[in-house]
Length: 428
Image (cartoon, rainbow, N blue to C red):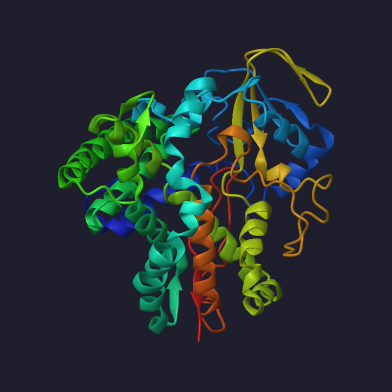
């Protein structure tokens, strides 16, 4: 929970842990045997697999008793994500949308979604992001973090690297001034908004009001930053510069509209990359032969990023709403039923991936579902991939990188928003 007495980085760690614990619920830390059983025995299941384990579910964040079915097979889930006409996304915003005035592209449908995405997506497209690797991302990762950590010979990679570096890089690309309190406060507030949904009603009595305060704090802090940017009159090649010059349906955005959009984008601008990096490092450190393989051939870095995200994705589930009666996997799903799509189960579907539990860098890849898929695929995907590739490259330069035996072995946990509490490592 928020505490003004905490150091800003400690506050981010506390908020991160609130999300991790909330999305772990009563699920086993390793859910994959359970998910494999579900995928085999009831691939289209009556009920909500997240709620069954006391995990907040975007299929029914508000605990209204909405009829829900759970999907576990790759092809079923891919077909849902590819079909935005029959499967609607608006329920995604039920849990924390109110904290950001329901301004969520992920919760938009139809023409509204397509138009806003077309307007906003240029700075997030792959050619634009790849230009940032040497000019922004690598200098942040190496100069501001890894080179400062190297002499220490040890670190908690989560606290000292994985939490702050994506925020520093992404917020620089937004066009924010480099002020530590500004960055850490915005990051903590964003995590508090994401933490609003809780399966325990007593916890939700705290997190939901806290998320409303956090959402307003984000707006109040961002608005003068955006006003100052416009007043300078220097439209740089960053996200704020794009939003001030682009037209949407023949009009340019006001500062108020830009503030609302930026606040929305911040909800996914750091923490998901943090978790993906931490999950990747735990898997590679647990499989030193694979880590050595990629260390010897750095061309395998993109494959290592994608394979670890397949094998243990941060976003373990997404949800959609049936817009009409639909038949899926031989099962009739009535209009108005939510479907909870288990990305974690789909990513280890043996019908799609040979030997799916294995960490295998030469694996023939199918379209990855870990960023979502179809029209609603994560808009920040290319930034996250670039950050993860640069970060892994830097980690591979730390000699004899290994787990620190003085701390518990890190455990990736949760049915959704998966991640470890810490990643303590040593190097020579």
